[in-house]
Image 1 (spheres, rainbow over the protein chains, first blue to last red):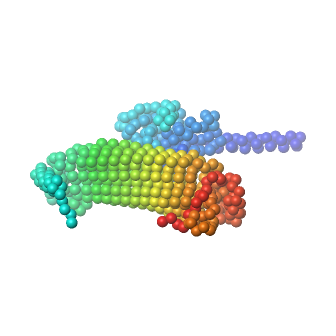
Image 2: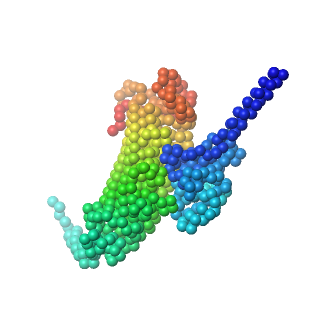
Image 3: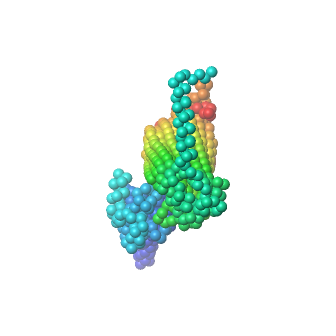
Amino acid sequence: MNFLIKKIMKGICFLIFVALLVSCQKSPEPIAYGSDECDNCKMTISDPKFGAELINSKGKIYRFDSAECLASFGKEIKPEEINSEWVSNFVIPGEFIKADAAVFLISDKIKSPMGLNISAFSNHKSLDEVRAISGGKPLNWKEVQLYVQNQWK
Amino acid sequence: MCRINGSDKIDSIKLILVFFVFVFYNQLSAEILLVGAAQKYHNIKLGISVAAAGDTILVSSGFYSEGTITLTKSITLLGKDFPTISGDNKNEILLVKADGVIIKGFSFLNAGLSFIHDNAAIKLDGVKNCRVEGNKFSNNFFGIYLAKSNLCQIVNNEISASSIRETYSGNGIHLWYCRDITIKNNHISGHRDGIYLEFARKSIIQNNYSENNVRYGLHFMFSDSCEYSNNTFIKNGAGVAVMYTHNVTMTDNRFEQNWGGGAYGLLLKEISNSTIENNYFYKNSSGIYLEGCTRIKSSGNSFIENGWAIRLMANSMENIFKRNNFIGNTFDISTNSIKNYNTFNNNYWSEYKGYDLNKDGIGDVPYHPVKLFSVITERNRPTLILLRSFFVELLDIAENIFPTLTPETLIDNNPAMRKIL
């Protein structure tokens, strides 16, 4: 009996441990702008309008200076090993939004750190407000990934 | 002593005639318009509106705040005793949209920070043959911004910003889709990148002094066939970065005191067919970091008291390091690979403990610049805490004799016995 309880306790402990492991690090962490390095291009990440993150299934966070670098890095990783991808909200610098829920704008007037000039927005309304000034073409995340892949071969 | 023959004489007379006609013609046609509080034209915009192409506008010292001044005529703007033109922290100051404009002797202040617009003190937009010379720039978002412009010269400017705005500061000199630009004798500090080139071609960067910028002293992106020489880069956030570029010539530059976790003297990423000659790397965390670099020739460089002199990542190939000085670096070469496709030959290594019995100036035993411990730290950075411990020294000696983890072929077979001058 005692033995059984012990075993159950052990099991519960293990489950809690696993739960802790799984549950932690599922949301993005703030980037230290001006000192963190992009995990794709090595550049110092310096513009909070464009920072991006990828969290893998183990909870490790990769940081990027732009959505371009996130897309380029993400395509090297198996989809099942990616937990989530995050991009910065162009109109609220430093705020992360999920890449697949974001809307993107490609415009020559808005220069991103990697030269493909992609910016991200949480909704079409704020995108359209910026687009009214800058012009450009709206895209979704899938299209952005494809665009980056084609541009960078 | 110097005799001129007949045809030369006629040629020189022709030349002098042409010169006089040119000067005379210019004096006849070009006017000098005076702008200032006590002058005929009270503000610069007014002066510009009445000026014709070829005219000179001479601005007296004073404070001018006129919103964005747009130049669509080829004129010369001269400042007397550095008149100040302010952007009042909200707008661009001078927008040049005409060829052949000269801007000289002004002080530009407070071009406004903007989300969408890259507001600059001077923006040259789609122009040719312009010259920005001897101006002072302080606290502007971007200093001098060149977009789709060719054959322009940026000379003798003093550009500074307070890095309080940190991540929201723009670049000192910014080139975007430009060609044949000369950037010479400028002093830049406190911007995001001192000098930034994106999609630039055939441009020359010479004799500039770039210090205390938030990110890089100089930053290349996708800018082929450019050359930078005799520049000094000191205490920039992360040093100098040259990325995604072919045919870069880097000579006689100084990279100093770029210190910190992600800081490099020179960061090279995806560079090919380039030359690094006679540069001086002093007290940087990493002298040169190479990732994805091919066919770079490096010679005559001095690496002195850096953390790592060279960090050569696995995907770099066919690079040649010849006749460089490695003096007092914590690690001379570090790599994350067991294989080596690069050549090291005839360098001077202060750590070399070999001998030269035949006195030909070349060490008789090869030098092995990669220490075992540097390979370990490349994989696991926190192990650095063990640096200089007895055990680590012992490991290094053992590895030196029987290489197991370090690339066996990464050796200098002809190490120089004396410093290369």
